[in-house]
Length: 610
Image (cartoon, rainbow, N blue to C red):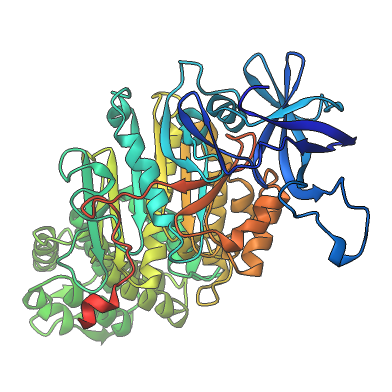
């Protein structure tokens, strides 16, 4: 017997076996090759030797046998006397190790008389890491120590970071530290020289926990960009969104809650015309000239004229002096037709090539518009109103049907202009971007998250066949944008939002686009999204719905691990998923340096009150 042997198999009942331990195997720790080894207990692994095969089993219970006392009377019961204790552990077979590789499944079962021993650190790693690690060719990151064995847990980069990751736990359970630790260790590796040029990492930070100078171990500058967005003021940072992503018909229809029958076709006509004749104030000026000619050469309509004048005065600064003659036009009727005229003898009879005064007046208006500087959002609002004037001229719409849409566009555009910048080409961006959404309204958080996710996913999908790169989208407090329970938004908006993220998590892997989700309430997240997550870091969860959704979503989580979720200590999590053969309970290393770790510490009241 070597000093790791603890007992002999004395009973086999299918996949469940019993081992009678040696009398000297009941200590809490042992010394092995100069190292302190922790003794096995419930939920620990044991190795059963059977020839050249090492059968792996997990302890599910312990009991004692009394070989001296046959009496059932309590006063004669000496089972717990020190000299008569025979510790018996009950095991469940889960796999075997052959040629230094672990295989799950009960292909081999213990036999009576087989010896049982404590697994070594190497054997523990072989069990957990599913044959892909420790072969000298793969890279790994250290996350912490296994709770039962105290071994360092190394996570294979290819199996974890090339997958969708879910980090879940109640508030204060340590999930922010786990998220930060995971990527802190990845970015600290020296043997991945091309990570900063061939991969991009973007963090949607809902609480502003990661926006400080040294978050993720990277200083602000060439390798890290921080955007602190705000919907309350226009002086904050603005995140660049590509022009074609923002002005996309389906996106705008959902964003502005356009009705299917009238308002969505209105937006479709607007975008079709804008793409045909181009965007920009010069195109707007030509459109205004066209509308003025149409107004004064068709059947006179003072209401449409007044609508156009009010729109121009609202969006074009200092244009009032050029509109004076337009506003003074009146209806002149004769036997042949009705037309407009201006008291100072400027007539609009339809022949603008010969009517020099009329042409000069329109040229002054268009020139003033061309020299006006408008943001992309202001221009879009102007185009919406010009489209309404255009449709009213030709009887395409009822004005009362479009006004609610225009009010929603104005309201949301004014808000979005505080934190979004529409660009034709994205500026050069660092490999790590952290976007703080702390100062955004709840509606704005969902809007910007949707734009960012769609823009990067569509772009990365189109480039995946050309460039061998990866994109990693990290969403902290993911229930804010992936919730199925929201009752404050329209169903069309919620469906579009969820369908986008469901497409990303279903199809993203093949394009090198990966999600990392962190949340306090996994039950609020779409079940479709949760079912596609590959690897989980589960901190303390006590809500019954959260526990049930985890039970339904994770096929690799065993009964014992599920039962421990409500009682996990702070900083302890269960790692389970496709990258590991068996769930492992890990005490995640805590980053002691306050300059590096996320700003999520609980307030110390004694310091405040003291």
